[in-house]
Length: 297
Image (cartoon, rainbow, N blue to C red; front, side, top):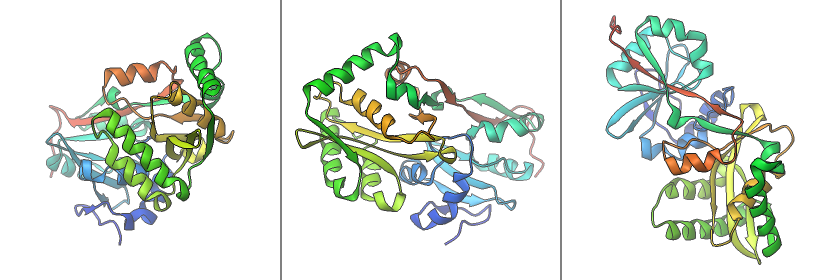
């Protein structure tokens, strides 16, 4: 199965992985959504469909809150394709710097208005900071990790197929505690399709019982690791801080940044992510046809 040529679109299926994954792997920005697994696991939530422009530019179409959007992870298509896309979509979502910067002047000259999408900025942290928790700014985090290590008989091991039933047990406990699904469906499928999606993670035990796990994948040619899911039984005080620190320490030195994804405009989540002192962001932008935009088709 191959991705159809625009204006044709096809559902995002697992059969397209071998074609799409190499394309996404070339993106330099480290946008957390722009991996095959990141898109596939949320294909139903956003009704993702895929296409390719005649110049081979990958196009993704999606829907959210009654609005249609399109994304172009690897490059901006030509003006004729953009004009056609804006006729059938409400906005252009998730434009990374590598796509925007080379052509921003041209895009704005065509009448496309570009705005920052702060709610979808990915948070970046230096791996060494999360591993070492240095100085006063990490004092509270460091104390929680030390308390966890002191009070609980804990064990960490790589997440493997054998661990999946244990991870699912933690996930179900997490959903019950939260009283809401959140990203439960996507997290569960990430475990059930662990081998097919080729993600990596770690499993954590306390007194031999499953207590937490995290799962993600490498981005930006291995210089970055994105944490897609992190679940734990939070009755164990400090477990999330410990997972954050311990997993960072387990990553190879070639990883410079850890990407902990966006806050989606949730103020509580934003404050929690800021307490870890991000070193920067993966910026994303939204494009919309402005007043001066006049399709020539």
